[in-house]
Image (tube, rainbow, N blue to C red; front, side, top):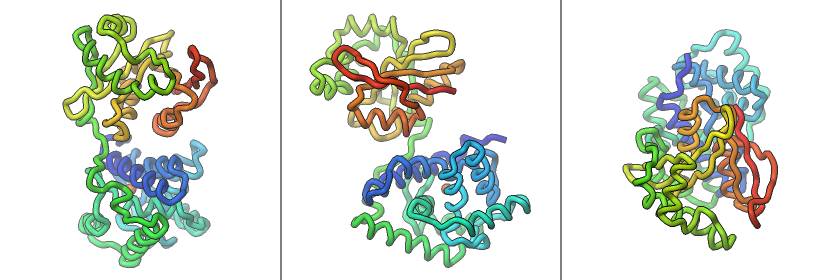
Length: 333
Ligand SMILES: [Fe+2]
């Protein structure tokens, strides 16, 4: 059974967000922290289980060669190395339970293990929670909560606050962060009548590029140019909370190979996971895809990070686009 639509997905997004922000504020690797946070509960994709999600996640990530993530699948539920402190049912097989016990004993937990344990204890499906509220919620759902584990989580909060020199909830923007969900982002195929809206979106999104490079084919288009572009290069409007805030356009190059011509979100809506949701949408819309490819200027480190860390692209090569050196990215199925 595959379960990828449960609340655990939104919880994982919140956990990834918190891990990234805390890591940024204390000199840890924010990309690594984000990925670990996002995948710590990947074992839940196999169904609704308790302890078994730990061994399922561990074995799955090991089978893909992601040892660092596998380790987090294992350690995130254990802020001490004792198996007995697990909150929930012991529903893993005897063999898997033994595997968890042995691997836990072998592992010397580091700051990344600690970070995800802390983030797990504040990450709700609707957003960031107060650590006491979240632990109380878990306690009420499972009937008990190991008191030592409870205290260790509070100690972790203090540990990272000291490391960051700031309040945990400020660092993770507790009051404003909402994990993106499919309910909030919609996609609508653009038609000619959308040309003006798209010109506004492109101008807002590419103004900085235009200033930086002195040229940007996506900036300053006329309505007529955009109308032609809508015909040549199919586009989808990205609608967030009912407002058009971005665009994704893809063109089939050959059988199952698509070029992403443009993926843009206007600056005030960036950093909310909207771009990532758009790439997910493209993958589901062009369901026969084998490869996606695109280029972005080599010096736009934020874009490079977005496509690699957030969307899973790899860097294929470098090429010139006019006067601008660009990186070609590739995403293979
Ligand atoms: Fe979790």
